[in-house]
Length: 205
Image (cartoon, rainbow, N blue to C red; front, top):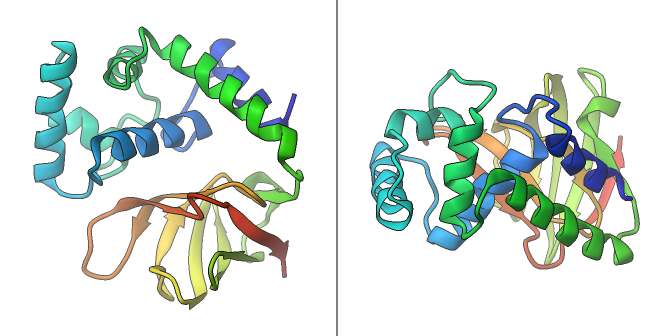
């Protein structure tokens, strides 16, 4: 079993999850992809609240959604009910079924995964990592601790020097998920790089 699959298996064993856990980062990114809309303004969360009611006949308040996306503080450990409702929005019967699907997809992808990468828990504050993705994107991130990073170099991408974000891992051949990305004069958002081909390299400087 790959390390990421092992991480996903933690949810089945009821190990507490946080908003930064890979499973929940993946859930948010998948909802935004399926809904065709990034959750980054109050209107977006009001819109998602209505879509959930229309699709599932379940209620999640815009405030709950904002907390889960990191738009506002609070609820670091999301409720199981919240995760189940959002899983239903994606067509699953429960949060557990979503996790099973995620694990199965991860196992299938891991057959061609090189295993190269860096996890946030391997870093110390002040460490820097260099990442790149197609066609010619490159960035250097400085680790600040607690899964937070600051962009200190950026080339040909939507990232800018001084941006801050959260991430748990950077893996070659896999997309990079940056959560709670904060840029000047913009609201926090989730950013995905290398959606089709993943990162081309990751290294610690």
